[in-house]
Image (cartoon, rainbow over all chains, first blue to last red; front, top):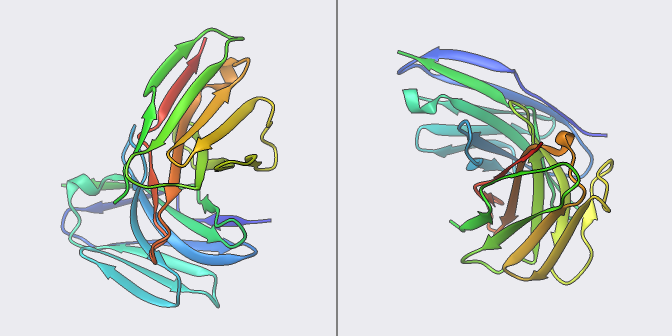
Length: 110
Length: 116
């Protein structure tokens, strides 16, 4: 089977840094992605890790450790507009399907 | 990034009717598209992989006779919810990947289906 675990909710203040962790269990692991989704909207791509290490894209960074089946998304200089749901997602080999975690709702407070 | 459109954006129908949802890749020829379903405040559940010119591949537990998928061209995939019932009410989203090194998927805006 396959599973992804991430915290259901995180709350932080504007300007702070927050880390959203994701652990996964799956066969045919290809890479780990992160998506952001605002209420009522479609998911948008944030970051992808195919190899171990840190990927940085502006205020967002993502990390992967394949040996630990673990990754995280780091959001810096939080802004109110970052309040949304964040999904980690495993891309699998054999069809390259992407399976999503349950999502983490981030609340950014003033 | 790639642009994906869906039509309609929302639909309300009576129980027992069929509803067709279109997913178009506007600037990319997608041999593969993915259909997801999302219930309120829940995750995206992969329903099926739509393959251009061949049969769709359904995930375990998804009824292929209820959710008919047709991928007749490189830019259009359709999902038909047949004999819809209230429990089929959900947010249906399609996506495709452009195959770049980032393996990002581009999602359509989604279709909210409400079955009365």
